[in-house]
Length: 217
Image 1 (cartoon, rainbow, N blue to C red):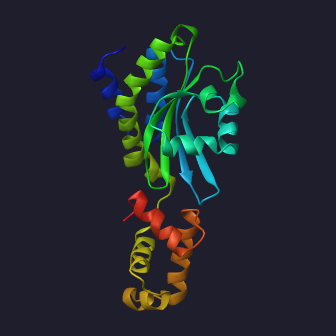
Image 2: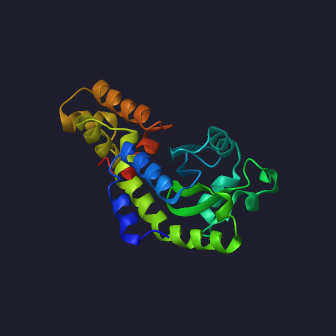
Image 3: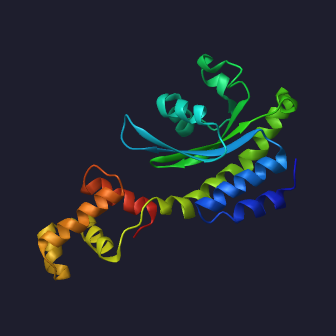
């Protein structure tokens, strides 16, 4: 395995979405993995979720992840590296036989895991165990970098929208916020509607939660 300091230095440079993708590609080349990526699952509600992927994972795997809830179960409930074929016999095919998962952690509605397409030399059980143990050390750091930098790029609210959502989080009505900020109630409702739209939320409360989790205020 490559030196710990080298891998840590690669992960430390992740400060935006493009640097995350580039870092994953550099790690893929360094370790000569066939494919490598970070998958982040965002729970929208109890029955739906969003899949974000970074790196160079094949599109057919991403489509499978969007349709099968076993990936949500793994992401939020498992801490042990595993082959996809061990999660479900449905994926015991040549196409998915080398897909290896390493949990990266979760935080409230977000969870993540690293995905590796291993080569033939890495498929030995002892080697796979070493790979899993090695990346369990670094996968949480990768997820922290994602949460700190990349997740915030999902949406950005203006200063006035931030003021409105802050007061809304304190239980103030649109009329009360208009009096506090000395703007019209219609303008407040417009800013709050923008927050709901930008965060892809279903209502004001949902938008407040997403803004808090993303560090928007």
